[in-house]
Image (cartoon, rainbow, N blue to C red; front, side):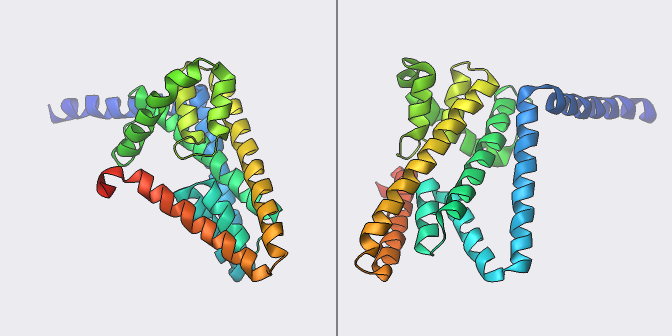
Length: 237
């Protein structure tokens, strides 16, 4: 009897694992997740190599990465410029970070929405993102793809690519169209921030190079402070 009762449970678990593997390989969301994970792994490996070859530079790169992930593209880019990093490095890091965030978070949200995957540690983040997406959904729906592109590009909090990808899902956009529009808006926003920060850096640097570094650092602090204030409204009240 014990053997018979144990077999169905094992079969059920194996069926769930097989179903999950099939979902990853056959669904569009699964392929997006695999691409995102592969890109994240490649970027982490690159940082590890940098850590061995050039420890000082790698610390700066890790700092830009951590700031960008935690506080968004503007803070990460301002932080990078304040440490004297070039445009190609700052822009490339920002593009990789936000691409990975979209390619990983979007399929996880869809799988959670469809009850195919339940991650307790991501539940609050997904609920918060879903609420933000619902607030802006009707505004974007009027303009369709153009509205979604503008939403992702617009330089304000909670208008980033992750929330934009969720809105695209709620609007029923096909996966690859959603990813294309969201990432295109993201890259456009990154280049706009780069042009703005470079122009600002050049104008201030004409007075003093130290003043330019100080201004970039101050800008990063202001953006981080604004992010913290807006992400904890109840605590502020």
